[in-house]
Length: 165
Image 1 (cartoon, rainbow, N blue to C red):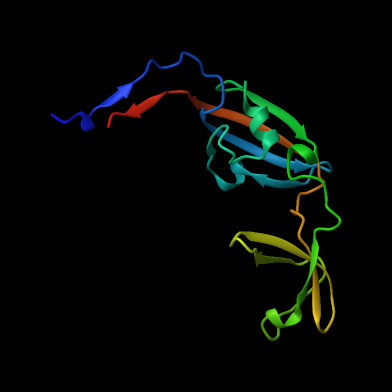
Image 2 (cartoon, one colour):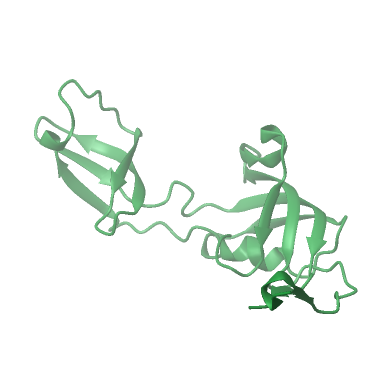
């Protein structure tokens, strides 16, 4: 029998507390200061599963999860620096109207996805336009906003398992 067919299972941690590396399943609702909801896993009908500490969550959300326990509910508010950052007044650019298809309808406040220099997708917001140029704001749509989250931790998996090679 080959060693590649075996799994080395370390002693399972006897804690259901979220820590760096925990795999967490949770439900959440996010709202702005005025109570307007911007996102909810409840509305999608399925919880979110994440690994804490891997950079896939905004910093403040990640940090607020650490220390929570399975079955715990918590409400917390993140300031812009813990979420999507402050608004950068210099994060705007002018685009040639020629890059848009003929007949493309523009309106102020409209969100337009752009492809950045490293192939990343950036959401821009139209802040002005004329016959030859379109000026867009490149700040994240939630930059400069305080965000409140209601979080319900459903499961916490702290199992360390590695496959032998």
